Image (cartoon, rainbow, N blue to C red; front, side, top):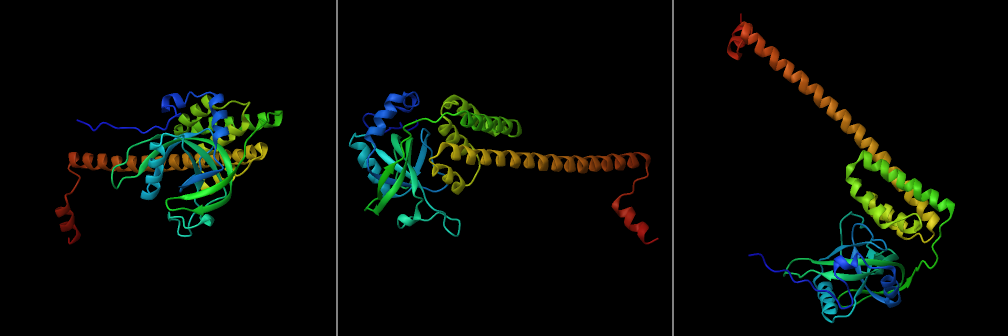
Amino acid sequence: MADKTTVLTPDGIDSPDNGQQEDQNSLVVAKDLLPEEIMIIPLHDRPMFPKMMGPIIVDDIALQKAILGQVKDGKPLYLGLVLQRPHDDGLSHTAENAADFFKVGVAARVVQVSPVKPGEPLQVLVQALERFEVVSMLKGDAAFIAEVKYWFETRKENTEELKAYSVAIIDCIKELVNLNPLFKEGLSLLIEKINLSDPGSLADFAAAMTTSSGAEIQKVLETPKVRKRLEMVLVLVKNEVEISKLKAKISKRIEEQLSKQQREFFLKQQLQEIKKELGLAKDDTQAEIDKFK
């Protein structure tokens, strides 16, 4: 019999099913509750954007205990998700000080915490809410604690120029789907979650869909101006299209080469069989004898 999984959920937090259906009012309430000082969770590959929901993995034992302790208190828990700067050797390292982090991250509400077994990482489902800039950061006993300044988008920009950028991004993603079906799910999510009246969020979701590096996507996160953000994302998506075209071209060339080699191999095999049937083919022993005649 499989072990029964117990899920820890802070008070005031809907289950994942309900959380995905939350209306704008609940987000407004969450913004009002965002703390000025927040526990920092290092991200190692890519940043997360506002309005996105997803799991984060926590390996550090002390950080696991800190999160579990606050969740058990039953109060809403908010975490600061900040991308850690890449190390020179390209490997992940434990952050030692504030300089190891980028300056802009997102505040996220903890939706669900999966139970942790000894020696295993903790999986935390979070709903990202707002961008913030780190004002100062100190290392506590279990985690980094940062004083942050939030970048609330109080007014939604929606000019004809922004609509044009938005349409261009969506068109590029549709082209990507034709070149690479793996982008189909991302496009469906983009269409479901975002509309042209919210170009800033469209830019965020589109950036997250790309295979761009964490540092490139971080630049999008650090760009508060919607027009500039759309412009940056359009470049990323266009680059993705060009990469997909190149991959398709290479794959086609390799397939053609393999097909040619396979055809030549099968023709040689057929010719050999025909020679055997006609008594014209010689086995290896007879061929060696003929060399010395």
